[in-house]
Image (cartoon, rainbow, N blue to C red; front, top):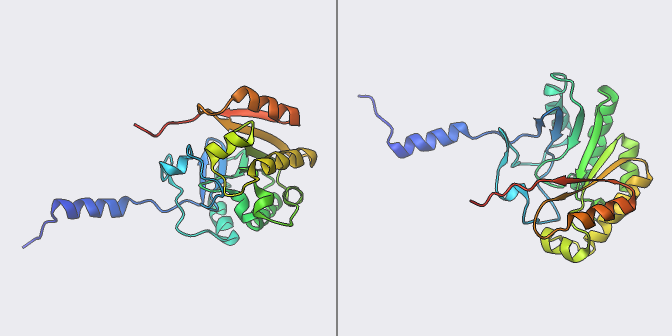
Length: 223
């Protein structure tokens, strides 16, 4: 006699079969994105990963951090499927937690595909990689652009909304932006639209350093 699954078993089975494998490589528009870590020295209250497991159809909650070899293998599967504008290090963590991987993968991309490479960062690379000239290493590897999440015009506001692990995080974010600009990387500072930030003052700060400023719309996940 054929056995029938009860409702709970059917639901659990469906959840099991529809669970998506974490994505190392994903895409939005004309850009390819590399999700290389879920670690971050900040705990921003507005962070997307606090409310979602991913974006669109991609699961960005990594079970393990990928090796450079794994990133390259996943990249190879899709990089020739479209004329992508950029390859971007940006996922559910701070990419510069894994500087060596960024350098290795960037060199591979520049050697084989000549794509523009961008790093989206919170700007704390020097705190995460003590004793290293992070910006210069990025430049030498072939990184073309950095987008830095500034998010505040002063330390007090930055600490309030981003809750950094490092006490002097805000100062290092500004220093990172200045060094990236000085080394000739295309540098953009950004801020999310939340009540605590004064976008006009952040724009003035970014422009005083000599870099472009862009506003990122905040999507509320509280219903």
